[in-house]
Length: 467
Ligand SMILES: [Zn+2]
Image 1 (spheres, protein in one colour):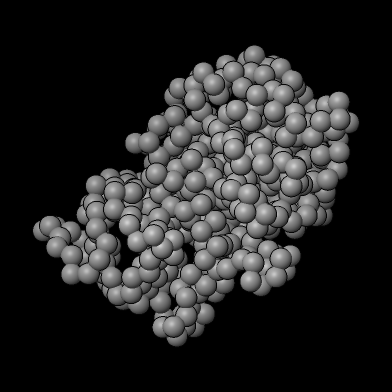
Image 2 (image 1 turned 135 degrees about the vertical axis):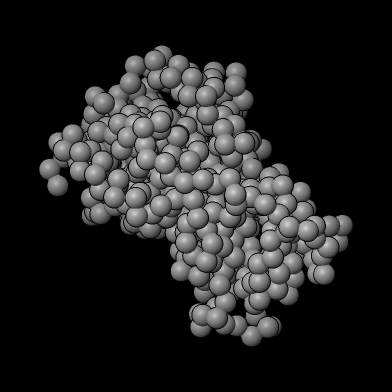
């Protein structure tokens, strides 16, 4: 936003970097080996150059001027991918506690979101992005907001995060405030204009998506328009579905007995590149059809537990060949934008449901990296540390007791079950050094928090919500 205080230069932090001495979890199998096990290299080096992974190995040759960073004994992994998130709800942490989904939306979240303007959306999004980066999340798929969508998209660009994002689309629904209830043709036209402007922004780090919120807040005409726009522009569709039982029952009662998947099929939405948050109530009868489509599920374990939604059957979805990502959803429901917490929780829940042999730490880390990247359509660029991929990298500091493990321990298990955001020491996106020694390099966090307090107070006043 032109009239915002400057947030700092990112220009000088993108040179060639050699990370040396760390243990590298590539999350990729050895090329040509036929063994799907991801390669781990101990005491190795990773060279970042030109925004990409330029080399991985030992005793690498580097050009003069390459910055050398000693990370002896630290863990190096791909940046975490959170496939479902609402940075536009970051201000609403703790303001909607103790509610089931539809009350949570109608009583608090929708009226609060309706009060956003570009300025509040900007600082709200930047605050959430700061939390993501400091916690090792380098890529998000964000379902967006309605009012303030431009400010939100500008903040994503300024944050340095990699993001699949777009305006959130709503045009009907019981309890939907007038500020969110858009004219169908107008909102479809607006989102296309925003997509024209922001798709590919920040050197391709921002990709646009069409984000109808969920079936209960979209008219049949809106879903028809989403299908038409997705087909014409080849943009993905990101939405919520099958999150709570009461929600799916309401969908059936309003949509002539069809569930979400049957409705999506009738409106051609299954023919788009469709990414669904939650999928808690997907059933076996859905799997075969969905596995042959461009379809993924983003699992949000903390949010699902907090809102009493249930637990998605991640083991069954993956067995059916459906890619699964992972996400924290929002501070308004799961309170933390913490990829490490979601990873650990996802594993524990599947182990409780299917037994301890059903799901490993490596499975959990896969959801948060390589498979998570596949779930948001970016697996050719990110999700593993391989030559030529974008240099989205996280380093976890050593020397803390919770990461101590014997050399025989599988480092995937160490990361999935023992690591936390507090150990994140360095974060790179496109080779840009955005977190150094646990501190943001390009954002003045004190200023972001100060501006967040200022604009949030005005937003709460505008909302009329009695808190
Ligand atoms: Zn959500």
